[in-house]
Amino acid sequence: MHGIPTRIVPAVSLAQLVNAQVALAPGLLGAARRLVEELRPQVLHATSVHFQGSRAAALLARRRRLPLVTTGHVASMSQLPLATRTATTLYEHTAGRFILRTSSRVIAVSESVATHLRQLGAPADRTVVVHNGVDHHRFHPRPEISIGPKSSSSGG
Image (cartoon, helix red, strand yellow):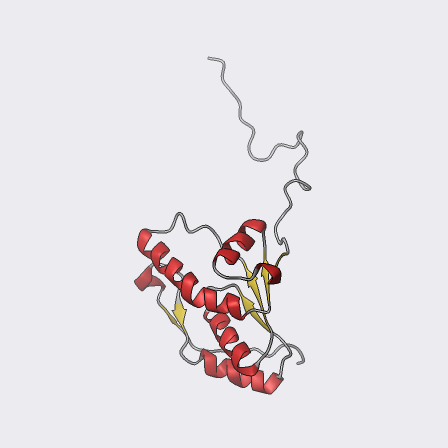
């Protein structure tokens, strides 16, 4: 079958331990390096700054002198428990910053995400916004369309 090769790299989930979506795949960098050697891509893509594959892509981009394009899609951390929020902030200011500064281009999915990524070190002149959500100014329900169950009031 032709298409994009898929490789399975074993990972250990730390979600139960740290109460966040975190996994470690010790063999990922080596597997990614072998894949880059096999495919000889002209560009690498990192899906956000929070994934281990994005760190591997940034390292390989630097080592191989390949352009890296990173898509940023982050959410507010305000509702996270303090320990998780602190660890995430530390991660973003270290590994996240490394990924963003290594990137030839950064794609943000909204203006607020672009602002956040620029605060982490994404160069403004290499950061573009490509909205991937619904433009609520352009697309919205007609006023006469009701969403959800109708409520009835009892006059009693």
